[in-house]
Image 1 (tube, rainbow, N blue to C red):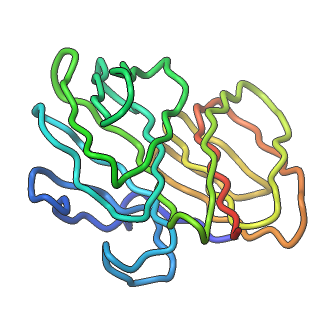
Image 2: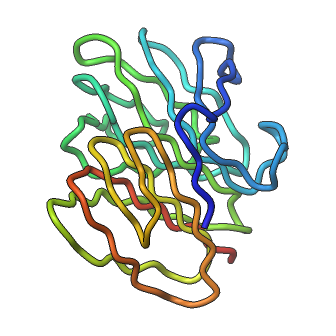
Length: 187
């Protein structure tokens, strides 16, 4: 397990130059936007506009802060994404644009290289104690709000725990927090 503190996340401009992203984790370490196998980041979106296109990448978006946005993804009906919505998965190479519902939002963005990796994202609310199952592969737990303890590792808001699982395991989580559990597996 590796604890990735909020204060250590890497801040960088968007690929299209229209904003800033906060990179939480990327694999392999240190690669650029064209070469990653998977990437987890947060972005603040302050205006309507197009998304950056990432050829050969699948992405999942979740709204962390703000009223949400409506996504226009080529070939699909418009999708409204809010803090209450399930995470939304789509091809990052499909032309996509966003219209903000009512002001700035912050989103969680998980991307994997199609044909090599797959991913899933789920929200988990903890109020006391629970156990969460993690599959074989790489798991990341982002603490969005509150504080949580995962197998002895303390997370505050913005912190992320990176877990490598050689086998499916259940991890003990305690505290009061809203978490995002991300599973990434090689295909």
